[in-house]
Image 1 (tube, rainbow, N blue to C red):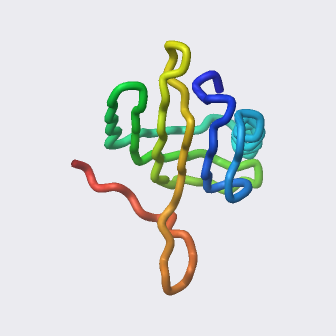
Image 2: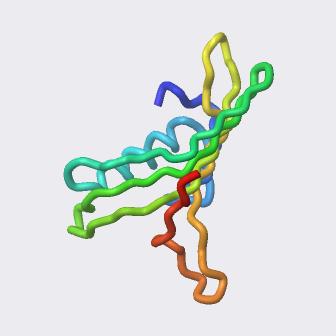
Length: 118
């Protein structure tokens, strides 16, 4: 959590429509970790970083896999984007966006998609 600015805004796939501030992001992140039973496998693919001055953007596809406390095996890819600002000599996340695509006909999330290898 030390990478997040105190006034971070997060658009996540869990929780509310938006989290405002490091305390809310911390609470949502803790709840997400607490929903897993045992280890969580995490993969980052196609990480791209662009930086100019004291602003930087990063994007990637991220996969989380493991077993939930309800006993469901999960393996899903999400789209991740973050904006960083250099504050007092350290890079801090000031905005983070995590999303999954959805099928516009069924209005259900498309959790079975996988990014193509580049």
